[in-house]
Image (cartoon, rainbow, N blue to C red):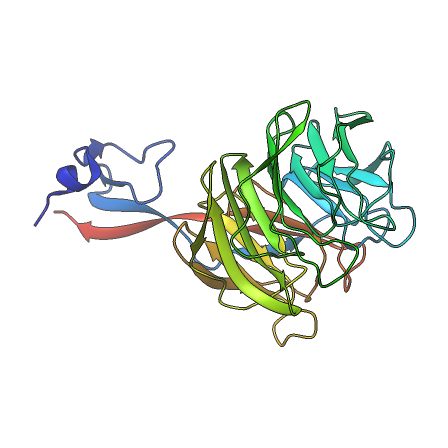
Length: 324
C-alpha cells in the first residue's frame, strides 16, 4: 500500500492549529486538538437570494464572479441593455452598440467580450467592454446565435450555435486573439443553447443543448486548446442551460423546457457530474457568473425575470482519528 507521502508528494503536516489556506483533500495533524483533519467541500451547498435585476431579462449573457458580475442583453425590451452586480445590487451601465440575446460571452465585469447572438436575426457582430463602454471589434467568421464562450477579453473562445434555420446547429469554434477571430477545430457534435464553462481559451467545457433533430442533449465535450473530446455527459439532458466555472469545476443549471426537473442542479468535478442542489424555482435562459463550482450566481431567466440567486458550497473540516 502506498504511503500518504508517496501518493500526495508531501508528508502530513504537524501544526498547532489548522493551515490558513488548505487545499481540497489536504490532510494534517492538529497538535492543539490532537486530531488528524482533512479539508473537504460540503456536497450540498446552499442557495441565497441576491439583489434583483433592474429589468427582468431572459436569454441575456453573464460573466464575472459572484460578487462582480455583468449582464449583457436579453429580452424582453431593449436588447442592448446591460447591468453590473457588486455582490449586493445591480446597477444600470452603458448599453451595447448592437442589441442581442444568446451571444457568446467571456471575461470579467470590467473587461469582457460578447460575440454573435440574435437581435433579431443571428449576427456576427462582436463587442468588447472596458468597464465603462462597449466598442465594436472584428466580426465572427460565422454569424450565429445560441453559442457559448470561455476565456478572457483578449483571449476568448466561442463555440456552437445555430443559423437562421432553427434546425441548423453548428460545430463551429472560433478563437479570439485580441484583434480578430480564427476558425479552429470543430465540436464533435453540432449543438446550440448548451452551457459553457472555462477560465481560459485553452481549457473549456460545453454541455447539453439542442442537437440536430432537434433533440435535447446531455452531451459534454472538453476543449484542450486544440481539440474537443467527448467526456461524461450530464445526468439530465437539458437545453437553454446556464453554465459557469472552469473545465474542471463547473456548474449546470436550468432546462430542459417542459422537463420534469427544470431546477435540477449539477456540479462537474473534472470527471463526472453530480446532482447536488436545486434552486427555489426552475428556470431556463438565465444569466450566470462564477469562477468555480463552489460559488455560482444566476439571474433572470424565463420563470424568474428579475430574481438573482447565489449558490455557495461551504468549506468544512472533517475530523477523523483522535490521538491520545
